[in-house]
Length: 325
Ligand code: SF4
View (tube, rainbow, N blue to C red):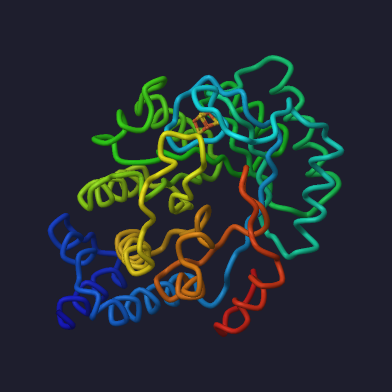
């Protein structure tokens, strides 16, 4: 097994593609080999990303009241959850959120809104104004996650100063109908393709622990490789009371480390970011996400779930001998 892992490490270091069978063997290694696996993915991360860890922070700029039925989401009108609901917040509040994120060393700041999408109209205009304000008043890298968008809407955001657009595929195509029935996988893929076409950076990943198979975890990874996305946020389900997945069993920490390692082997030179569910699922093993291959984490609060204190994340990165970008 050690020879097999090292062989795939060599391939990843040469940016050679790993095939489905190899990926399957990698993600199903016995737990007794997990530390050998992450020693390899750590070397791959170091080769392509060095010791630099990028911190990303988001603001929930419009919360709840979403028509979509994503089974994991507390913001869907299809589930009764206990979250604050509010319309699009002001530019001032968004800039204030970015300033706070910067003081906590976040390199990227994302404006996130609930809903299927935001094509044209007043809300899009207001988000563009907020992006202009971020550009003129802060040095932060500007991201947004506003759902399924047309190329026209994306162009307006780019003109306003947007640098990166986030839109998750959430899971593999073959599992998507178990996760969402109100829009199609192709609509999500089209949004990512449009983001790439107009020259914005793409941030696109998924959520694990929703009942998908090992094969489907690989399937999503291969789709992201095909789409050539720049940054891949990996979320691990934190079940929310009231949603369809409220009783989903949590992932095991070693299972998560294997997923992260798999993504680093298959996408050796991309940005791999650990997003939601880190604290809930990994607990004391959070610092191992970097050895497993991540070169970025989300800090601060998530959309409807509180994150841990910034200071703890900054200390964790320092203790791992890494540096903040
Ligand atoms: S994930 Fe997005 S689109 Fe799906 S229900 Fe939640 S807010 Fe709506």
